[in-house]
Image 1 (cartoon, rainbow, N blue to C red):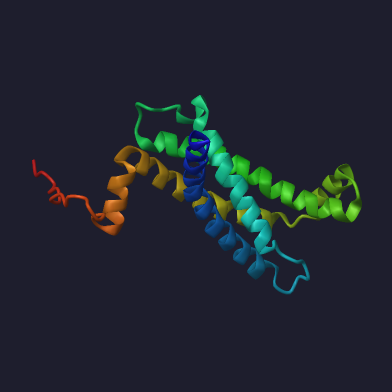
Image 2 (cartoon, rainbow, N blue to C red):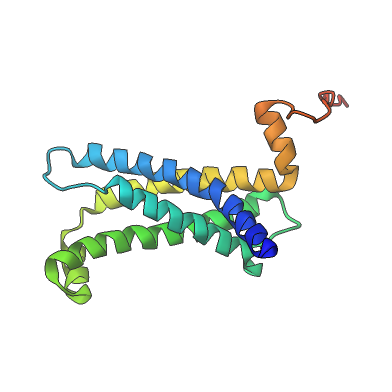
Length: 179
């Protein structure tokens, strides 16, 4: 039982960073949607939906990170993995965004086929693409920080952002070498 609780704790702690990040990011997207839809009579995404989507994206990031194909460019500069992961996560986020709209329309129409038809006819594409652009920037930022943390190390990143942790020796700052 101790091994199970340890594994669950490990999974939970691994799930926290991407979930918290996407929770905040999706609430930013929700705020943008509210501002874009003001006066149109369309009800925007609820906070609960953003929280559920953040959990889904957080778990999707963890699952995607376990796939061998996700780190396709281990010997190349970080930008390769950042761009690759951003593309994968953005496609996943786009699918979730589209499915969110599809479910809204399916409640009104009663079937997924009719909902998809109605969605494609009635969606405000500039709004959809505006949200996708915001998601792109947020996901790109996440991927850059995630890759830097992976290379530098979690402890070093925490030390850089928050200073030395208690019970941790303070290392002298490195000075750039002048050639």
